[in-house]
Length: 328
Image (cartoon, rainbow, N blue to C red; front, side, top):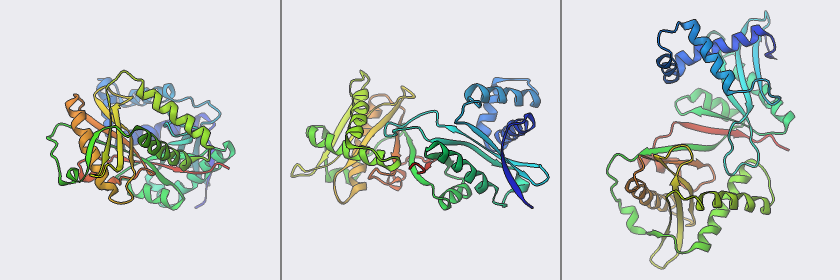
């Protein structure tokens, strides 16, 4: 069998894309499908499919020059799968530019294990290179096959959305006794370590001059520090007053009931996870006492604390944001 990839241009191609997207919603994204059914009681399957298509078209501008739907076809023109991509609809504080984003990739079950996913990914990368943009995606933690594919073709984990419900008692561990965690006092040293960490996050995706990075950091800092919402800045020091780490947290930008860790910097050359855990436990207490239900961090690969350390503290990891650097 031979296959080829084309850009979806005909109405038949688009019908295939929206129909397969809906079938995928029903089988692999049950929570989203259940919500669609709940919000539209009594609707037939055909009506639900049309509603889902309308929602997708309202959410995403398929006519934008940076967006594409690619269809993989068998030599007899049978459609076997699709890849939907476009400019990412959000940008993290350390991103100079939004990357191209793979919103969905689906191969019809009977055609899986023929390398079609990789074929679609290569086409998406070629298009991203034409735009001189990096390319990224989100993969669910349980989707090991997809994660393996992305690893093999050069994608790296960039950030990990991690969260913990604060509806349980927060107990001190022996870790916190090794460091004194207190309200920030060594402000200049803390700001320097924050800037150093921010720089590494920027350079993960794109080269930039120090002045550009400093300006981005100052914008990020002032955006939150001047916010009237509650926030806390803490530092960890040793008995001899050596700064070994700092943490900064406050209300998240997506929910008033969720506290977010804006920055976690660990200066110690050893015991990174121990310093991090001491700081995290202190912020958990602050967040719970402040009435937040959840503590969240978008852990960057350039952060010093490991995802395993977060898991040991009861944090959940739904998946991974991955990126491939394509810019010149």
